[in-house]
Length: 265
Image (cartoon, rainbow, N blue to C red; front, side):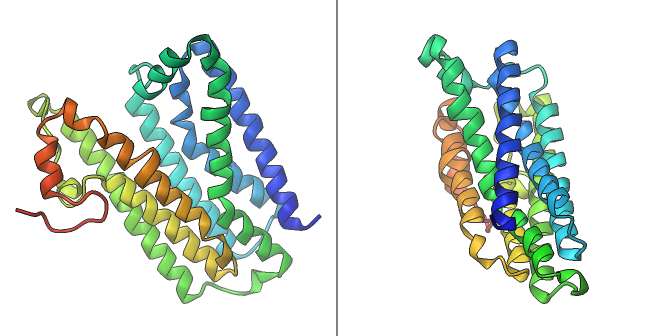
C-alpha cells in the first residue's frame, strides 16, 4: 500500500470514528446541531493525523497544517459562541420532525458520516502534500512563488470570513437593528462575505498544495465551493430568508451574492 493510501485510510477511520462518537452525544442531547461547531475541528484533526503519520519537516507541510488549524479553531470557536443557548438548528429540527423516530439513525449517515467524508475529501490537498513532502524528501526546498500566492489568497479569505462574522455579530447585538438587513462592512459588497472568504481560503490551500506537486487535488476546493454556493451555504440560506426578512429582497437587488463588487442602484 502506498504512503498516500495509508494516510488516507488512517485519517478516514479516525474521522468516521470521531463523527460516530459525536453522533452518540447528539442522540443523548437530542441536538444534532452540535455537529456544526465541530466542522472546523474535523479538518484540524485530519491535518494533524496526516502530519503525525508522516512527520514531514518541510516548510510547506507546516504551513498547510498551521493554516488549517487557524481556520478550524476560529470557525469552531465562533460557531460554538454563536449557537450557545439557541437549541437545535431549524434544519435539523425540520428533519427530526419529518423522519420521527427514524431520525436518530438517518442523522448518523446523512448528517454525521456525510460531513466526516466531506471533511476527509476536502482535506485531500493537505494530506497529499504532506505525504509528497515525506516521499520526495522535500525538506531541503523552500517556498515557491505559487506558495506565496496561495498564502495571500488564504489571508484575503480569512479577512473576509473572520471580519464578516464579527461584523454580523456586532450588527445583531444592537437592538436597533432588529428585523433589519446587515449591509455594513464587507456585507455592503457581498451578501455572503463569510462564504466567499471560506472559498478563498481553500483555494489558497490548494495553490500551496499545487506548488508541492499535488495539483491533481483540485476537486477538493471545487467541492467546497459548490457546497458553499449550492448546498449548505448561499442557496440554502436565501431560500427562505425573504419570507423572514422582506427587506432582504432589496438587498439582493443591490448586492452581489458571492464575489464582492460595487453596489447596484
